[in-house]
Length: 183
Length: 204
Image (cartoon, rainbow over all chains, first blue to last red; front, side, top):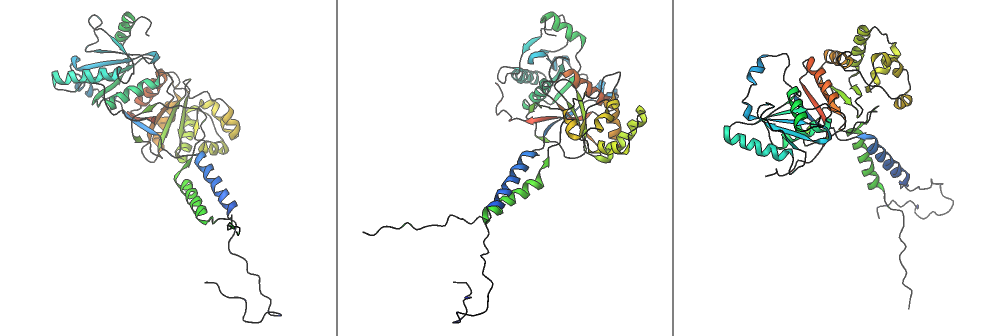
């Protein structure tokens, strides 16, 4: 076909010595082996995905002006307290220990804190026409996972106003009275 | 009846295409990925629905282990060198040029400034075995704060602060770290998390 006839026309014996034609095809098996070995190596030792993050903006501690603006009607607030063993306590309104009944719930997707927030923020929206304010407080013995989950709930339920605040002593007292052993 | 002869086919197949593809993939992986940084502490991050990606550069990473040990990590080598020099002045310790070079290459560390010299003089494999005690960050001795101040002061571009906490670490430590950040007006920071699918419906 497309090969050059190298047999030399007619002269068969005693002709010039020709270099032996070597096939250009080489055995590529070892090369492929090596390539795949390296692929496997790179796949296992490197990180491909950049980690996800969650952006947190905390209020400026030194700026006192903001505090005035941040005062909101107590009825619009929902306070969520994260405690040990993934337990969540919550109450609506002011943290007056004489009137407030603290409720207990968990992180269950259907019946837990998500439902509470959806229901309550809906109610607040209906009655006042404004967004609910979620105050997240984490006790020292709660886990880091809890606060991330809680912030996640804020994302999932589309809450616009929420803040991470230190636990007040009154909150602790309330918990100690209403749920002994929770702190 | 003549025997039917099965045509003998050559077993060697043309591997050029396969080879091409293998090298293509190899090049792709070499160029798009970066090596896993050696981590002296295992951190199992919680998952969240957040979809923001952490940038590659200019990130100060504060890792918090399950047991509450705090580690500090930074990629920018120039910043790290300046940071170490400032720490030398503040804490009256001196590091040799060799130790400074080691520090530049160290991605993450978690020792008080007094123990840093010892860590820097170790070999990489030895260092991996040693249990670093974590950077002190309580109210009486807050070295993490100094590291952060110097890192933020000397980085050429604005530094992002990321907190990579273990999901089982106590909130108390996280609170201390956040308080440290707030003290120096770093009110914007990131929590490093894993990916999780966002639930499609809300409970009614």
